[in-house]
Length: 549
Image (tube, rainbow, N blue to C red; front, top):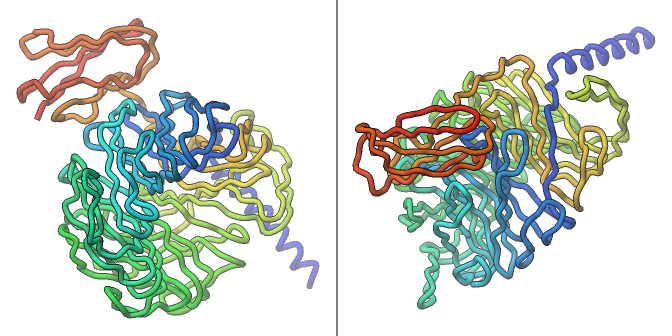
């Protein structure tokens, strides 16, 4: 009987290993970025030129592949790379204190908005004093990384920023948390924006709506009497907003339901002016910590986080050992449609969810190994299998792809002998996947280089089930445009010219090129209408139409 059981267990293990290898994705390349001390990556997004931009914080000086000295404690650090991981440009922004960059997004004008928390007073790149313990610090960049404007927003206590998103009116919605009460003072000559409502408890959700030029339009404090930390925010299809985070507050303040366990997922739906439309508390008997949520293409919502709860209360499936990924699908009104747990190691931490065009979902995070282990790993470049060892307690990147009902399609584990913390998994414009996070692992297994104590570590995967998308030679973003557009050259060249014409063939602008893939074109002084951009390089010539709104 025991021999038959052992045989079945070995057969199951072999089939599981075989199935994982069939569906595993090839590693196309991996890159480490950083100085000799420490860098921490918190966000990454694809850019229209098939590249990527990484966002986080750095404490290193000018060494390794970091080009600027440290300005205080941690500084904002942004790394723009091309589709092969090569450097386009990098920027550091900071004051004399700690500046923690948490979120980045592409803006409607082709630039970027950076959002994080800062303890710095007016110094170096920081133009305003801190208003309390730490404040929201927002920086608007153009397409080349130049500062267009910045804002410091906060109360007299602590503000923690987690997420920023663009809104349909060209502005921005900021999601974070605050312990500050209503400010009754202002600093003359200092353009700080203070808090307009008292704290409900220890830490509350705090939402701030900005206009396109960064002026606050409204703000909302939402919380119960204990600890409520907002982790994710985005604008919904109806023009309102969806908020998700962690709460251990009972019925109190704005919270209308008691917590189930130590802490729960807390989802709040706002209308377009910030009023609460509905809210849901979702959890089991222990601790459930939401990290991210998105509105799905069917107008529902997908929630992702970590849980160690048993199958109790709103949780219908128990855990393996420790903490597992917990994914919950809601309909448009917040009712649960389905939920699923995914178990990979001793501690599984889900950090990222993205919906693909085909309604599948990418889920990213990291997992801590339960014990010392030796495993086979396939190198996507050489195609060879190697035996590698992990120590107990080591974190690896986890990339998971699921169907729209939660069924697993494939899982990929990527790591080294050290710790990896993945904060973003996304589908790239060419149909592959980018895994981005922080690594303090030495060169081993899937990692070929190490620079400092902690580095930005980025891994590009190829989806073997997909045909690679064909690139267009040139395109423009945004198009239609208002004040300017970015012409994107999607091939390599060494020199050339970008020329802007009106429909009568009159030359309006001519820009010399030296291999750039993103070329800003100014439109603010031109009337509404259609214009032609011609790109002529040593490697080809193409034209496209630009619409000025």
